[in-house]
Length: 203
Image 1 (cartoon, rainbow, N blue to C red):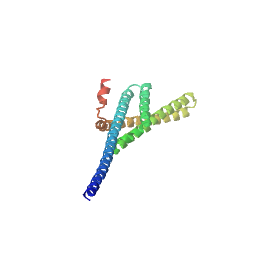
Image 2 (image 1 turned 45 degrees about the vertical axis):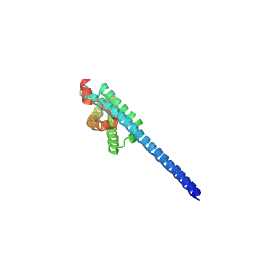
Image 3 (image 1 turned 90 degrees about the horizontal axis):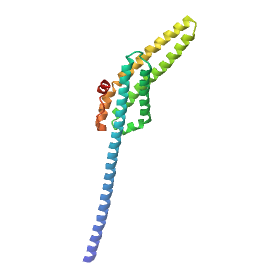
Image 4 (image 1 turned 135 degrees about the vertical axis):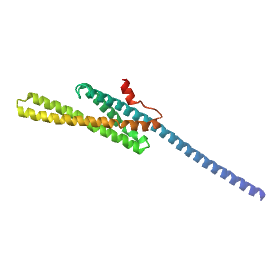
């Protein structure tokens, strides 16, 4: 009888040891998976912060140079226009990688980045469209013999130029907001991005 009780107790101990081992293995596997996911998300967040920080810094530098060239000679001459087109290409890069925003856990920061890009895109497109309209109206004015028609076109051109100037000013003011966003990305990126004003001043 004693042997049977001892065997039963031994069997129960063995079962509990197996159950405990299985529970510990499951808990260890779950903890390892969660830890792996945590570090992977941190890595992706850091990469996203690096990407958007560099992109916004580059965009801000381009727009700072555009502001500088805009104040010299023809406000919307070839150099300024090329600078603005370069800025538009940076926004296209952003558009192609916009899903990486989801790797940033700060919803407010994501919204600020997206809002800023939208606020830049619309006036930039307006500047390019205004340039095309002005060229078309100027060609029509040169080709027309009617004084009244030319005068109407010139008034229209003046209105478009005023609107274009307002759009450019809006772009410059919006670009100034990038600094705060880039600074908020730095802790996530574990990287200090370039000081735009110092970079432009030294160039």
